[in-house]
Amino acid sequence: MAAVGAVVLDTAGGRMGALFVLGVLLGISLYHAAFGFTGSWRSFVAERRGAGLRAQMVMLGVATLLFLPMLASGEVFGRGVSGAVQPVGVSVTIGAFLFGVGMQLGGACASGTLFVLGGGSTRMLVTLAFFIAGSLAGSIHFPWWASAPDLGRVSVLNAFGLPGAIAVQVLLFGGIYYATRRLEIARHGEAASILTAKDTGGIRWLQGPWPLIWGGIALAVLNGLVLAIGGFPWSVSFGFALWGAKIATALGADLSQTTFWGWSWAQNALQASVFADTISVMNFGIVLGALLAAGLAGKFAPARRIPWKSALAAAIGGLLMGYGARLAYGCNIGAYFSGIASGSLHGWLWLVAALAGNALGVKLRPVFGMGK
Image (cartoon, rainbow, N blue to C red; front, side, top):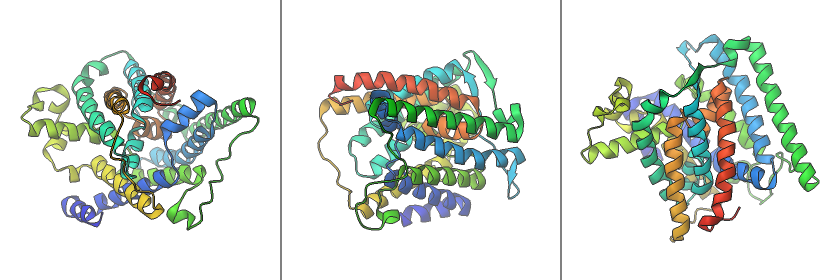
């Protein structure tokens, strides 16, 4: 970890080093709180267990309170900041739906792939490899999808102003929190708490497990720091597309002939070191942070064998997530978490479409020998 941090500092300086540290802290938080989006949505779709979704609403609420004032001012510490506000349309709907299906087959989301891999899951190597391939394919096809009908960029901050935007978002979070709790009580007679976690002895903050609410608040605060330091919110999946493009280029492909990789900013990223790419650096930090957390918890134990059906599901899921993330302008982090926290309507559309995709993905899991 120290070696990677040193390379980052040498390549891109202190600001990038700070983002690497934030990536490590995000990895630790994701692992210790077991804050996965995939399992939470599967529990809600299949069993109406809503604790994970309620923790996400707390996360989004705290992030909104941090994000929107910064975005309304337009700068932090003299540095300009911008949110993850993207067009609302066909591309996001289809991309998020595909991503949702892929989550359940791949067994993780974008952030989940990284922290579960760091925690020792060899299956996630398959998911990640095909996530990278799908991301590259999605980037090549992206310009065509981006020409599909949309409503443009819609921001609740622009529509309602700062107080109104915060009020609208918090009311929506509260409504979802309440609805999932009532549905869980109706099905099971009680609702699971997000305030407690199983006590396994040891030092809770260092060795885990954390209550879900700790994870949600930690992720929100850390994402707020990413926005303040980096000038943009946390994102994950573009790093996978970039890695795929670098691999393809190393194998002799000329991606400059494609529209996406012919754009100047994409060409610059492709020609520069991955340690100069903020998203890649944070992704490396997440994997290493989860690895550290797993070691501290004494749970790092990679499995050597993967059943072929499970490996096939991981491959299909990775492809769908990679391709879908590019179409949807991001994944569960860049589009859903950072998008909604930025007040972007496309983030809410992403949530609805991805939940629908998750419902289909849950139905497909038994085909690959995976339980619901």
